[in-house]
Amino acid sequence: MELLNHEYASALSTILQVIASLLILALGAGIVAIAIAYFIDNNQTEHTIRRNYPVLGRFRYLFEHLGEFFRQYFFAGDREEMPFNRAQRAWVYRAAKNIDRTVAFGSTKAIREPCSVMFLNNPFPPLTQEAHEASVVLIGPNCRKPYRPKSLFNISGMSFGALSAPAVTALSLGAKQSHCWLNTGEGGLSPYHLEGNCDLVFQIGTAKYGVRDEQGKLDDERLSEIASHARVRMFEIKLSQGAKPGKGGILPGNKVSEEIAAIRLIPAGQDSISPNRHPEVHSCTELLDMIHHVRSITGKPVGIKFALGDTQWLKILCKTIHQRGIESAPDFITIDSADGGTGAAPMALMDDVGLPLRESLPEVTNTLIQHGLRERIRVIASGKLINPSDIAWALCMGADFVVSARGFMMALGCIQAMQCNSNSCPTGITTHDPKLQRGLVPEDKATRVAYYHNNLVHDVELIANACGVREPRQLKRHHARQVTVNGQSISLAELHPYPERSTSHPL
Figure 1 (cartoon, rainbow, N blue to C red):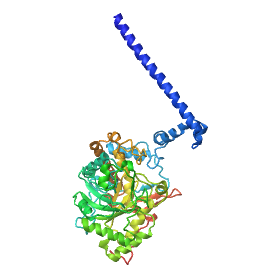
Figure 2 (spheres, helix red, strand yellow):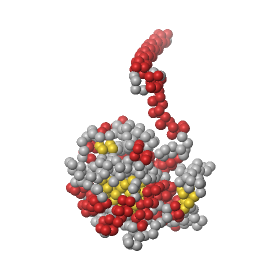
Figure 3 (spheres, one colour):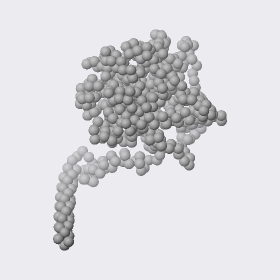
Figure 4 (cartoon, one colour):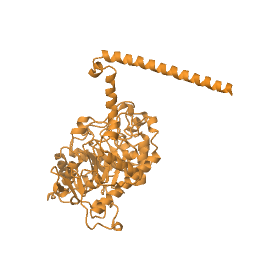
């Protein structure tokens, strides 16, 4: 027994000696590293703080970096943070997990805050058994293959490349489960979009990724090949987007893998920067030419997407449509909000260029009504619409459909880490690092995508029923009021009155 105890004591002593040696070695290495950092900081001339406070000044950058992540958990209030506050995100997370979405002890929302929207409940709402799901709307009545979407809420454009393969796969599987469409984004059609066998909207960006020739022009043969996929239901020609109106898409070279390059038909490893507009489209006439060209080749509905700025061109477009015939109109218009989106964009464009959806959506719908085109052209609202009240507001303002990108990213597990452009997304959604992608299991996240969609649509139906209508598409502007700067509310019908239809443009 004494021999055994002696052996244990000897082994423990050896272990302690090794640990002590390692600690001394680490301490020595730390002292050397501090000395080197002190010498570098004291002699460099670029950074004042580091020169005046060697070594200690480096912690400023660490705290500045970490503060971005800690603010949302420890310092910002539930309704304070941007671009999405904690209350908004928490609702999405609960909906995606299909857990209790009720709250207790009163609302934390500042209902008298300017621009807040309040829906007007009816004293005699339809009984539960009298309520209906949203009615089906036809897109592209003049096409060889028109489309009847099953849902009013769908997944907005997010490219494979900007998003990881597991993320796109999860969205595709989830879209199939919830019977909504998935927009491919401008990065082309990948196998991951097709994985779930869901309805797809193929987006044609200014670089024509996936349907381009060697010169970057539209390739009719490749366009026809994309259209041959039965699940590709519509084509969307992107003119601009809310994150960077006036500038093309940006995909850093470190994200352009061989696979992505093959799908986009571009060189691998190089920054992928789209032109700031379609080079062949200089006017509304040429835009309608492009719409007609794509529609004639594909036989499917073709629409346009833009973040509205100058409103005069939209009126010119409507007049040009009537000159050429109402069948020449785009089958749908997607309006993006000029207050940012996923991915990378110059701050000058994201913050200060274009109109937010609160202004652009009523402007577009009113223009279409005035020119007698509202029934011909379907309207899709996009931009920071992630909660039921957002979707209900858009329907009141005249949207036929609503699409969301960031809402579905949060359903996948996005924590708003603000690293979409760095290839270091901690949730595996916007990175191509296999180690980070490992945490995103497509089959599990697909269920969350479907839960988020279904629970959101359900709560939109609750709002609609409370307003006294039987289904969401019956919501009109008089069903809601918006708070003004003086704290008083005004009806949306009064704030954005419906225009009279021009007698020169009857239906």
